[in-house]
Every structure is written in structure tokens, then in C-alpha cells.
Image 1 (spheres, one colour):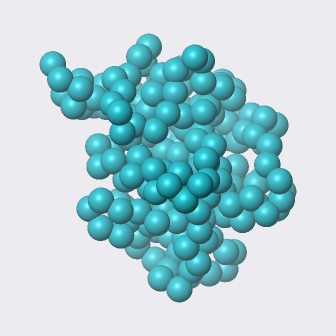
Image 2 (image 1 turned 90 degrees about the vertical axis):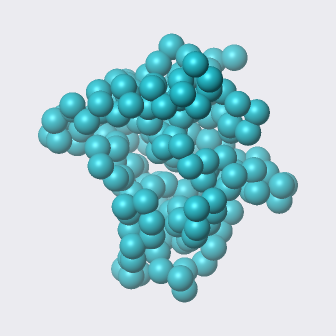
Amino acid sequence: MNHQELKSELRKASLARRDALPADVRIEKALEATAHGAEHIEFQAGTVVSGFFPIRSEIDPRPLMDEFRKLGARLCLPVVMDKTTIVFRELVRGAELIDTGFGTRGPAEDAAVLDPSLLIMPLSVFDCHGGRIGYGAGHYDRAIAKIIDKGIKPRLIGMAFDCQHEERVPVEPHDQPLDALLSESGYHPRIG
């Protein structure tokens, strides 16, 4: 089995476990993760922080994003531009939200495009070594590589439920490793 096939199998199994969590349990676990994130993730006021709006049964980072906003973060969200590109548009309270691809909503075209130095990232599977499997399009890996090319080394924190953990996920050269994982059980820095 090659890397792509293995990633696909791990993604399918992990998403089935995530989908099996009842909605009320997902809400409680997201709030627990928010409490851990608010306690352990530090940044300076004015830091550009990318979050995401949840799709399907993803963990909901919006409470954490609101906590970060209160601490002075400048928030942004990923917006799918085409099959290979995402950009990060500034999220301002009260601004219009539009359909932004991949089944989610986000800031409209007139929002500022920002380069986040802290990314709270969705995922389908993770391990404790910084391995992350997304949804297969590679949007984040390419976007992060572009940010790094600009001289910014963003902190990458995956946010997911514990049930999405695997002992080891396959990693390819283009995969951007997570610095930490945030879940209902805590804030977990990468091992190794």
C-alpha cells in the first residue's frame, strides 16, 4: 500500500469515528479543547491567527477564536481560491460572510488577505509526532510553504478530537508538521 492509499484508509477510519460522536458530545469536547487552548497557547496582541469554521463533524474552534480575539489576536480564515490555492482573509466582527469553498463560509473578497503566524488547523487524522492528514487536497501544505517563503515561520496547531489519533501517520516531503495538537484531553506539543 502506498502513502496515498494508506492516508486514504486512515482518513476514512478516523472520520467514521469522528462522525460517530453525538453532536452534544462534540460541543462539550470542543469547549474542553477551548479551555486547554486558552490556557496554553500564548501570543502577543496583534498576532495574526488563522482559525477555521467547522464543516461536517469537525471540532468547533469558534469559541477558541473568540477567546483569542479577546486577547488581541487579529483573526483570519482560509478561503479556497481554486483547486490548489487557499488564502487567509481577515475575519472582522459584523463583516459579511460568504460561501468560501469546501462547504464553509468566510470573509468576502473585500477582506484583507493576511499571512498568519499562528494557524489553528483542521484535520482528519493526527499522531503525536506532528503528522497530520487533511482531506487530501494539500491546500494547507501549499499555503504554509508560501508563508514560509515570505520569511514567516508560523506555529501550526492542529485541533481535533482524541478519537482522530493514530499511532503514526505517513509523512511525505511536502507535508508540514504540526507543532502541537489541541484536543479535549489537552494541549499536546509534538514529540520528536
